[in-house]
Length: 339
Ligand code: FAD
Ligand code: NAP
Image (cartoon, rainbow, N blue to C red; front, side, top):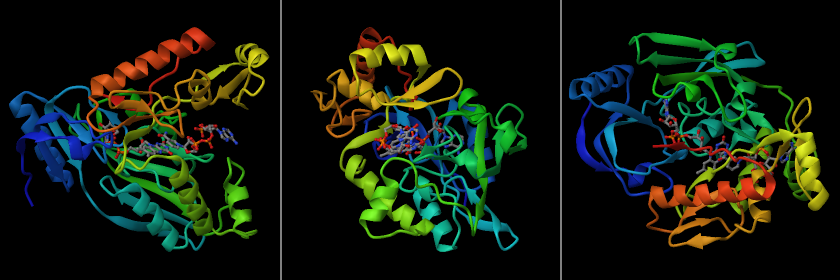
């Protein structure tokens, strides 16, 4: 199948905020060759290329004067299996949650805590997606990417990806790498991670004392569905701010005034604060101005009630950042990619 370029395409169906903007050009690539063709077409037209997957970590603030390329390649395969450790490879365009479900159906553990995260496999390394105490770096083996500077394919091993909290080399070098496929080492016997948030409690409440990976996945899906807005119903891009890492002394100064401050150890002299707690404490939870708002159940999530523009959502985010800085002396960092 060859690449089809469409002109002036609405990106509303391709970003989970549901923001209405147009792409100057739009195409879907299902093969490496189509990705290369798209790059050549963008160059020929003198415009840049913006790859997107599920659009669940994007905030589009204006029409996109570029070729928006939806990474749509599909394919899941087992590369190695020694009876315990199993290396699987997934194409960039595979939707993430169905991939997790597929791995569980093969009897493989490792991805269960990352259940129900929207988006695609190819975007997952961008911010080293994480939830409930697991990040993809914990099961990551390698990936294949196309270097847009040289046109060459490049293999990346774990230690070359600079994975950190919601961060990676690929996020640090925006526009350079097109991720084509990703490999994960899963296991038939891996220990489960239950000590994070309400996971164990939820399983026990269901009478499950010795859970399987599939049980953990089901419990996490249930917890997430209760707390997080479904983008199909209410536009959002998940957490809008990263949880800040701050010096212990600053956390203690805040705790002196707010005894219920939520914090977690984060290495030498630092603690992680819950950004959602700070925003809620500052009174923003449930705030709404026009169609841009802060979710009523989770203050970390900005929502689009219908026709908010990306600029309005960003303006709200900036007001929250300024308020948190003024109140707590903490500069919140935006998590989604702003275009
Ligand atoms: P997109 O939003 O399409 O793209 C994100 C970035 O990656 C963009 O800069 C884009 O240009 C780039 N990109 C996309 N595909 C490629 C590719 N193949 N090669 C190179 N660059 C590419 N995130 C978490 O970490 N943990 C969570 O628990 C979590 N929960 C969420 C819950 C909800 C309800 C929502 C809406 C979002 C949540 N997210 C979470 C954020 C988001 O789902 C993830 O970051 C996801 O990996 C984004 O995938 P995507 O395909 O939608 O990426
Ligand atoms: P939660 O359970 O209410 O916890 C609030 C915050 O406290 C989380 O952000 C989490 O940090 C932190 N936390 C909780 N237990 C912890 C522990 N044992 N050790 C260290 N930190 C702990 O959070 P939630 O909003 O319902 O989200 C649940 C999980 O899904 C979290 O891991 C969250 O990151 C993830 N999630 C991510 C997004 C996104 O878009 N990035 C969206 C929804 C959910 P961490 O965020 O560092 O884990």
